[in-house]
Length: 564
Image 1: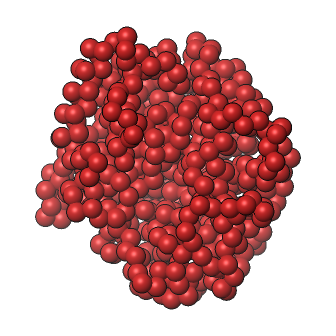
Image 2: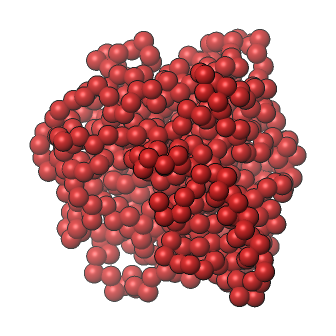
Image 3: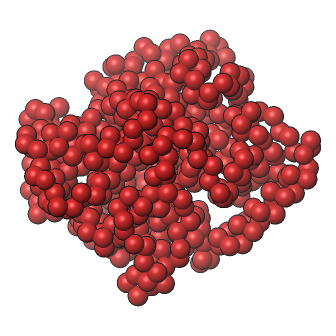
């Protein structure tokens, strides 16, 4: 497959270039910089399972991310907001999702915490680093701007009609601190022909026949790195992959690599992942941390096992390809002499998804009903068409989601660990001096990334920006953990709410959870019960009451409205 270079700002969409062979970075090292502050690359996967990387127990080949982990730090208690757009808004601003304006999705409920677009009373990491002299670029999925629905939405999603704006442009990346942007404004995409694709603030109307989003995004990131490395200023690059979010779209050669792997079935793959986790002592001395399977269905009696094995093979192919493309970015850093002084952070926006996208209504929201040529897209309710090609929109479903979230229960949009706990890798050769491959149990949250970026860049967090009063950020810097490798106990609690799924984790590792359809808090000791198998709420009712009150205080302070 040819490699595709996109999105240098000076290159207009109609001037897309196709280059055969491997895309190489500049061969020479960059000149010494007057500004010695570190570069920062923030890499975000979409709907990645907790155990989907080799360094977290997977059978999927992820050598580049494994290399970052083996030469950096892996965190085991790092948290997101449980879903795509709330996580992204929180990650970028250092605020909780409701403070950032996206307590739910990108639609406006006309309540402060639920405006469906990222607030201008918060600032992004890019805005603050740009003010401090950084070059700033973003590639990939945005999904933090209110996305309007039109009368001809069905035709719009299929590239059959065009509008200049996919969302109000004042909330495009280039108007929120990023000097460069190539990616999509909406959430769900066709990987071979994405809707809402933008270069800068201009819609990209066509893509080459051999287009594949994961490759195109990485090639753009490489082009940014090569250009930024020639400048005396450090850079901040936000690389926001769509993979492995449904639809299950992958290149045939990547699928072929895994076509037989998952015929062993749900139980075997999950048990193998758990065994690898134990061998690598991912959770230290804990041995029995695999939660029971949430499904009683037997693989041997599954009448759709061929389809299900193929679906998981495509998921694995998407993760594998993302890792390959990350490898190209790492090569560019190496060849430009920037890798030693670049902080690389990798995480996922939420746990794996249990969604059955075949149950959705095609042609609505961000789900196309047709391809560009008018051919119908198949949402395989009967599992009669294999996933992988662009004329199918399929997903792995809840049984595989339970597997890829090993060892946890539940998944995306839940506040159990399977929904909110993410793999998190930090790599920074110049600063991280601990034993290679350190596994760290510090409790961290996406709100900490803003604080960390400010800390290592000596950038100021402004109280007023573009004439807007700015909400103070919520997070704590991770720099001391990077410097020492020691486990940090933040002097704060971490709270969660999404569609009435609630949770609070305190600084001692106690956690309360209330599912949306319940009125009762559950209590877990994550130090001893990593997978939330033993509810201790009846044993320690006073602790539950105390933690609930602290949660309610947070809810009031952070613009959370239960059941709006």
